[in-house]
Length: 158
Image (cartoon, rainbow, N blue to C red):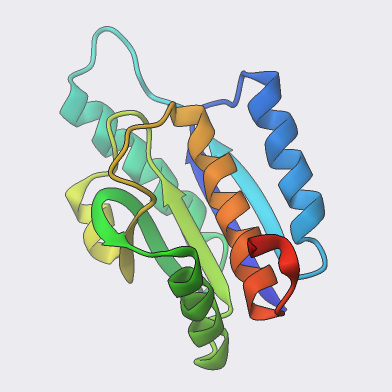
């Protein structure tokens, strides 16, 4: 069974986003094991943006190293774009090649460090649009659910 570990910088404060994430956790349960790991945001008034990105990325990498082997994917606005069907094929191909543990890295509002992005196997852009930061895990989980239902030929995608 495929496993998705979603590491997200910041606390999900908005109840409607948290409820949406929980709903997609339930929907994904028959298809994959899913974990959402919240990493504290290092944003403070006395730190430079570069330092915040560095510290946050170091914390993400420390958390990822505890998860064991996996295929790291950085969510990044300059990454590859997929249609939902292409994402489904990507999920299928990862499972076939033995990379069934996908580790999704969602940086803070300032993004991820170049060093961390360079360690990832892939960079993915969810959209060219800008979304509220708390919404990104929900969008990702919905697309993972959609991808898994496409692979099984289920009608959700239609």
